[in-house]
Image (cartoon, rainbow, N blue to C red; front, side, top):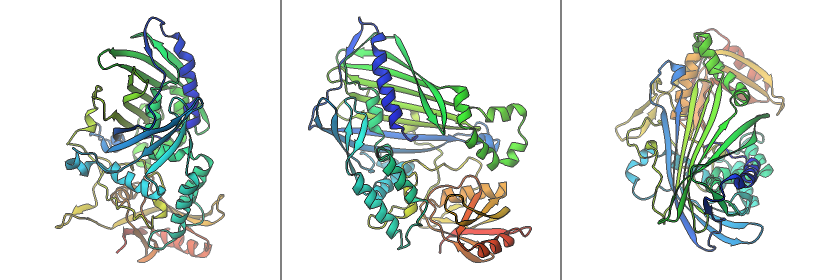
Length: 492
């Protein structure tokens, strides 16, 4: 799932409210959102991401790599007045009943469990508007304090560095606490998409379009939204709505150029062999969102929602699926096959649970987002042992360049290492296989770094930080020798 920008969603809700009177007055009236207070509502939530990078490995037609999760979350409206509502979400990383046999294919649950541990909470209390859009969060100080304790203590007694990593995340949360909601309970926003504080009359089959601008890295991207009332069910007292959104092709492509340039750089050898048409295609980007919502004609609440977001950029395609169903209501929307399939190409991950008393500082980085999965062409470094556990073989990496430079942010010197394309691919596969585990990096048989692998390294670039420039320059000289290699392994 992509991160949420709450101010933009608030703007979208306003645009949606203003646009509704354009629908036919002779249609169906959907009541304003009026949930019962003090009643806990349980939801089944299923998610999946499909990542297709086969273009870069000249393996067209290869199935995408899929990560998925299944959760059971609960929401209670604690109070409501003319200004808004107070809502409590109870969160769990446990697999719901009925799918325990497929646990190995639900890596998102393991990542989400670590997210709850890292943030130090399994309950969030939100202040929302009358549509249910989150606008404030209680207990932010306690969550940030927990994260500062995480940084101070670290895993295995190793404190986090004073700059970067967890401290960057803390600063972002202090600037915008609703990012906590985006990480831990994005379902709140998807449910709110189908809810309106005011009763709305809509005609079946009639579409209504609205537009807004979204910011992507400083580029303003127009987004067109089209709402349609698809059907109603008089017996079930529900209405089914659809929402389709599309980002402006030209503006969105412009916003993605820095990321596309990094991707092309990471696959430099492959990029050299691209035709002019292929290269032009790689530089294009698009984003489409499709949502179906089943809304109650009794209280205006969203009973079920299914969302698919597709982003294509730089020769890759990322598609995310989310399905939410209130457990006390029958399902009416079809589940995408990816959410129930037993035969999937899944990331080969080793995700260790974070101990609740001591959480590793790097573990907070994008824990709610599944790591980029291995590609179809990878030669895996993972082999099953006799006891079923996974042993990870060391990898030897060839260096393309090694330069020492001064960071303009931290004013510390760092050794910037760029691997050859072949070694970059090997390193990418290794980092995907050892997620959640501690590694060692050796240069000339000497351990120079022991990082915890919290996310895959996709671009073949390694930064060895330090304040002693002479030591870094000495290492750089060793790596500039033709045929110089770096050995990376799991920490013994």
